[in-house]
Amino acid sequence: MKGIDQSVLIGELHKVPLPHQKNPAKTIVNVLEKLPLRRTSVSPEKDVAAFFEDYHRLPLEVFEKFSFDEVCKLKHSSSHYMYKTFENLFEQIANYEVVRKIQSSIWRWGYQQGTWNEIVDTYNNIRRFSLDLGPDFEIRLDYSAGFNECGRSKYSRTFLDGVFAFLVYYKKKHVMTIGFSVTKGRRILIQQVQLAHRTRNRFLYKFPTNRMEFVINQFLTYFPKYKLSVVDGQTLIQKNMSSLVAALQSENRLITSAKENLPFLDKEGRIQENKHIHRCMYIQNKINEHLAHMKSDQERIEKFYGNTGSFILTSSSFKANQLDHYQVAA
Image 1 (tube, rainbow, N blue to C red):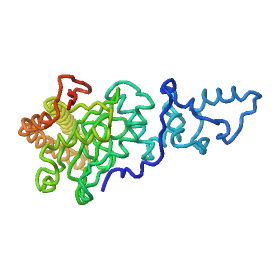
Image 2 (image 1 turned 90 degrees about the horizontal axis):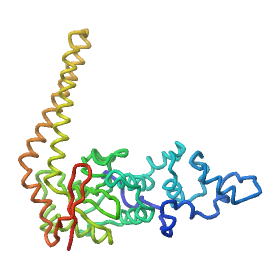
Image 3 (image 1 turned 120 degrees about the horizontal axis):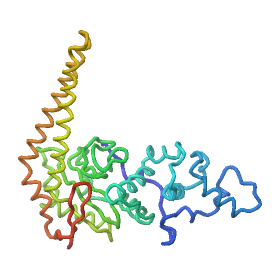
Image 4 (image 1 turned 60 degrees about the vertical axis):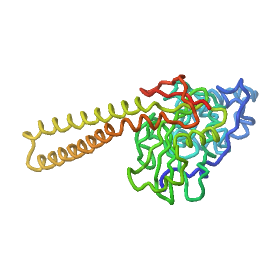
């Protein structure tokens, strides 16, 4: 099964008093004792101040005695790009990367850094999220590559309409994607409740009738005190269709350029360029298939995201990255 098992998200994050939320690193105690080399000035206060002034220049091995919580606090508190080996930790190791992706999601979908305590709560809630549907169902966490606000996911290459996804597995088979982003003010944007396959979805009899209502209820259970907003199906369709059209135009430009190059190539070069043209044409055909399916399914998708069962979608909207989201009320 692809994606991150929540059990690998080891390490605890701890909240800080409100005055330290923007700079939680200042709550780390015994900083000098944790460093491999002690400072030599007569004033420990000056040594601590000097550390916080330039710790972003230090390689990862210097922080060997710092906990997961402390390393994340240092990263959150720095306005500088950290030393390369330090940055690599937040791009390669799952629990650190999830913290980075939470910060990135808040910025990409809310244009704010987010407070440290928000990040702590979101990390802990992601770790414990469950569908509560029995042992046949498992979930794995996945997220967009790099710092992208949406797109192909890192582990399963599933297309995500937001930053995060819980990949739903039934008897070890990926059957559904629950996509979401976290943004400013403890708000979850539910952006994707999508079947992995168009047919043979016999597992659905195990689900409550209204899947949207069920997913909303699970987020309310595992993200208490968060505001929930559901994507507007119409803007979701419009955005995805616009992306597909742009991809189609991009492939067309590649084909045109390749055809223009053909007269100037030798025999082997023309063979390779024709292969490239056929690859582009194959991609175009697939994109056109997706577009046709999306157009035929547009009405169903709009109704699906608008039907939240016992929950009400209010007129309070949250717009970001070309998508409208409507806040959920009981």
